[in-house]
Amino acid sequence: MHAIVRFIPYALVMRTGWARHAWVVAVVITAAACSPVPDVSRHSPPPSSDTPPAPHAARTVEPPITAPAVLPPQPYEDATDVLPPAPSRTGRGTMHVVDGRAVVGDGTRQSCTAAALGRAVARGGTVTFDCGGPARIVLTEPLRVCAAGGCAPGEPSVARVRIEGGDAITLVGAGAGRLIEARGCTASEGGCTGAPVPHLVLSRLVLEGGAAPRVVEDDERLTGGGAVAMDGGRLTLDAVTFAGNTCSDPEASAGGAVLARDMVAPVRVRGAAFLGNSCGLGGALAVVDAPLRLRATTVVDNTATVAGGGLLLRSPDADVELSMAMVVGNTAPRGAAIEHETAEGALTVRDSRVEAGPLEPDAIAVRSLTD
Image (cartoon, rainbow, N blue to C red; front, side, top):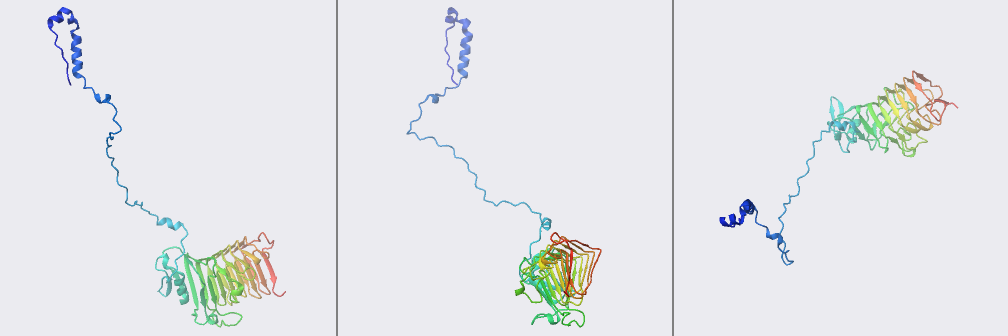
């Protein structure tokens, strides 16, 4: 700070009467001493165009983020169980023998393949699964079982095959072909001198999306059966679900899900479900020249384009028994629930619900094979 002070003689002050204004002088001196130095730059002329502007201060730029984002933990192992399990992969898979039974898989879904199942079935006996949970196995060609005169050259003969799914296995055809074929000794040829072979048992499985070949491409004795077709031998279905199986030839084929024919021993069906299958004859099940014992089974929403929306039963003299069954919601031009074609065979229905469909007033159509 700078102070500007003028010294005025005392006599002059007193003589001119400035004394009474002395306090004004003191205030002026004090204010001048405390005032800042004026900033003359504000009154400077603007810089010429030839003068380069002062550089700005450099801005600090943060480096880009290059580290990968860290994904949050995903504890979703249990949640995958609510989704339909993916089909098993193709490949050789795993099959081993434990206590005399064939086990498909090593505890992982990828190890349960169609090839491994085919090797287990060819071995015969009981087949179980170790897939680490529910699994879907896609079959690109049928599983084949044969015995006695039903085997082609080079095919292994087995007396009994039991496929036990444990309510966790689905065999899928994806509409590309039949799932299981079986041939054995037949009633018409008298080849069953002892117990009928092979004995095919399917238990606690789901079979879906099978499709029987066209008649011109199929075995002449296996014209139908989208999921299972069996000629001769013996067939037992225990708590099996058949869904969405069909016949590629909808007029001449029989058994959208199952065709069983030419058997001495009765076909036994217990606790099964036939849902949404279709064919020309017998939308769900066709039993031809063989007895049938069907118990505690549901046959719903199946379709036949000719006859027998639910069941086709055709035999000159074989007896058929249904007990605690529900055959409803099936459609066909004739015999919406059951088409029974026989000469002397009896049809017995006990404690069951059998209803007609929307296209046919009669739930059961009886046609004599002697006509």
